[in-house]
Image (cartoon, rainbow, N blue to C red; front, side, top):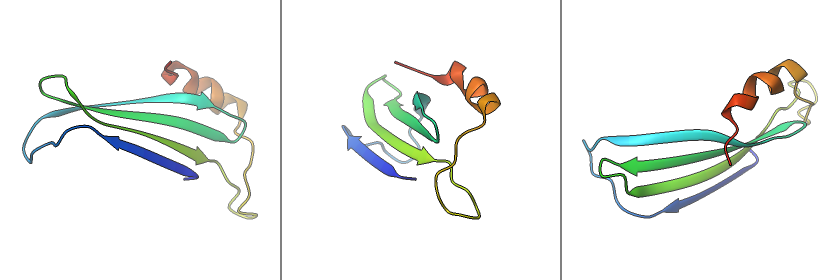
Length: 80
């Protein structure tokens, strides 16, 4: 993970049902932008977060381009 930012709006109590929404905000050459939103049972926003994850080579530990077929498979999960 290269970046994480989180905003909390309201508390969520133990045992409360929540709705977790996850989508991609960006498909880059070697990275993904991911957005997380958590809503309470009443639909109120409890938390939102964004992360940037980077595909890296296990050998070099450096960013490596994402394969084209993986990018195509991820496109349906892009959100605005």
